[in-house]
Amino acid sequence: MSTPPEDRIWEVFRQEAEGDPMVHAGNVNAPDDELAMHYAREFYGRRGESHRLWIVPRDQIAELEDPDLLAPPFDRSHKRPGGYLIKHKLEAAKRRAAGDEPAP
Amino acid sequence: MDDATTIQPLGGPVPYAPGDADAFFAHVGSGGKVEADDWMPDEYRAAVLKFVEMHANSELMGVLPERDWIMRAPNLRRKLALTSKIQDEVGHAQLLYRVAEDLGKPRAAMLQDLLDGKTKFHNVFHYPTKSWADIGIIAWLVDAAAIVSQQALRDCSYAPYARTMKKICWEESVHIMHGRDVVLTLMNGTASQRAMVQEALDRWWGPLMQMHGPPTDPAKDKDLHWRIKAKNNEQLRQEFLSIYVPRIRELGLRIPDAALQYDDGEGRWHYTEPDWAELKSVVTGHGPASQSRLGFRREHYADTQWVRDALLGSATAAA
Image (cartoon, rainbow over all chains, first blue to last red; front, side, top):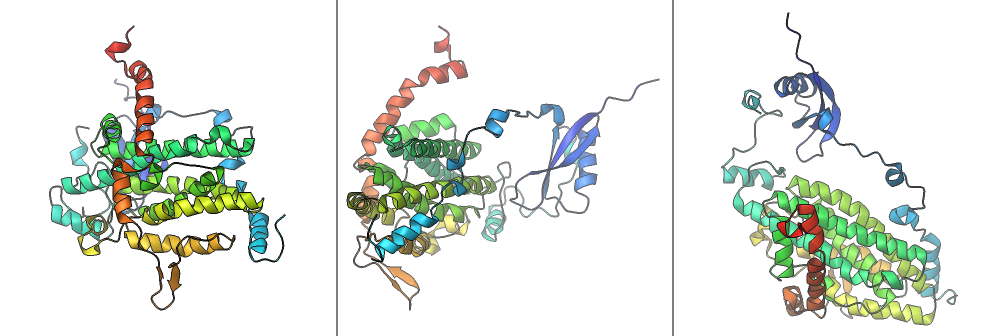
């Protein structure tokens, strides 16, 4: 009696409309790339809801797990637009420019 | 994949057949998108490559004026912000060279052409910096002029470039806040600090007005027809003026162009004709800092040869 071929997990990425980014959709298990393509097509493409599909073996995906980088303990607010609080500075500069008050 | 041909493409009929240039141009002309592995005519590929390569070169060269000010930043937070901006811009160059590489030109060839002066970078990066106010004006207004065109590029027909532009625009919006904060702080400071900002604005205004390039004939502009870019040079300049002239003037800064005014009737800005001869001369390597910047880049490229040798396993690195 032959044993069935061992399945691999394939991660599926879909592009909803032309030009969109590829977004993770889910995964399928299949023994080879041909069947993985068929399964992905049935799960994520049979209603015309995907413009493009990528099917990638899970064991080929490299994941970065580095909390020091992804969630750094230091203040990195200078890297975000909200890190610059200009409201009061702008008001002060406008008042001075309008001649309402002398420069500090 | 041996059996891939048995699986039909998803998403309905293919909008153009590989090799059919007319159908391809109709596709992009009507808002269709192109991916890196799609077939495309050579002239489209060359046009996108030229555009992206120039953008990548500009990101890489654009950090050199700012680099000079890292050690002169007035406090630690400004130093962190400036260092972070420079890291972002070099990152943009990396992302864009990657997009360009997929179009068929190796990175080493792009860097060599830049160093040899065969390819261009934006006019504003050919000028020297003189004071800390320059760092505010560059981060605020040069990045603002750039983001106006980059936001339009998020609709580029070449989808990998359009998607990259989304990330780049987000980061540029941080740089603009950093620059505006630097300018506001100086404007709320002493009279000599305000004079320093005004002096910087006076020097940068000409290059800023030239930055988007002279008006082109829309009928002849292939980049527009193929939707590589969504707006023409004059539209971008008008958009920049509409947003930033009020923001500059409200701080009490004077824009050094007596002819600059908005015409309500025509719905556009009038201004003194920018010096297009200067633009042409500057971007072909004859700007005041063109050769020193390229010289620095060449020297740095030679100095870091050992890193490429080590990583790429060149025979010369064996020792």
